[in-house]
Image 1 (cartoon, one colour):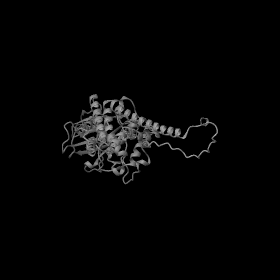
Image 2 (cartoon, rainbow, N blue to C red):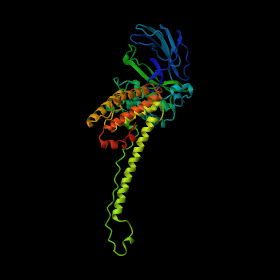
Image 3 (spheres, one colour):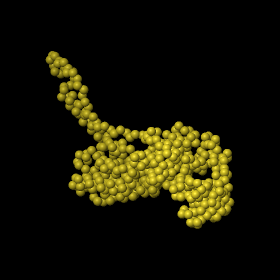
Image 4 (cartoon, rainbow, N blue to C red):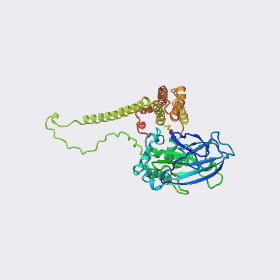
Length: 457
């Protein structure tokens, strides 16, 4: 039973993109796809506790009595303009469509402005999602084969649980797909399965949408536990086709790592080894004939001095290179790109600073929680070194930076250059205070530590 169709995704929320117009008892006809099979479904529905304006019905409704409705033919959904009320009773007759499976294998998918909204991938898609979509698409050229591959991957590698954390923003989907199994990842509700399919599908070039409604168990009452979400893909000449990425009951999921392994991090650079001199046999003593300056080669003190000087020069060059790379990374984060990117870069400077100080924060923490950890880290560092470095204003400003980060996340495109400048100043002030509160030898190593150059984002 269909309730709503969500076509627009801004990486945080799937939104209803329907346009409703008042309709009478007979709803505007929608031509079924050629070659498909249709059968009529008649339902008598009584509303109990369902709220809002969306009216449940099997797609595609053709006739309704007992309720005044507005209708969107593009999604086959209904609303009651005055809203739902307990006791509302209506009868709806729908023409349920089943696509011709023989057409799907060779069907193409539409492209262009007419379907751009269901092909759009919001900026910021995690790299793991992109690589998984590419992996599933690279050996499946036909659109239907790509959709089937995504459906099969989700059904085989993940577990459905009613108590899984809700949410379908990029971070939620990344945790659902790639989070540690023993930490709550790789399991979700139909919401995560449908949203993950739709995003992976769009990354693979498929026009997708998410449909929410109910999967009733028989003809009895439909309850909240029957709520269900599923993805659909649009094919030329066929129409919207539903897919079921849910695992089979009582099936044990295979570990994701068996079939998809994120690109490993670059191995940490080893310490610069001191050049070693292989032992050699003692050369035979030369005859003391001829003047001293006639002997070839350099004296032993000269060789030892040259080797030590070369080692010092090598280490110095490495340290200078690391320091330059670190400075360039900071400049790129804080001074280049759009305001949202600079604010995100400032946040990375803070989290890298915490990691350099031995106080790393987990990827599962909210921005406000990371800000709290940053305040504690600076306070503890100042207390340990008995220093007054790091004024309280610097600590408080981290909360301001967390607020700017949330603005970038939930209202993309609204950050201003002035806010980006403020974020850069906060990050610089906090990281400087945290570094200055470290012991002197740690302060020396801080600017040449290679970690920020290789830590995976």
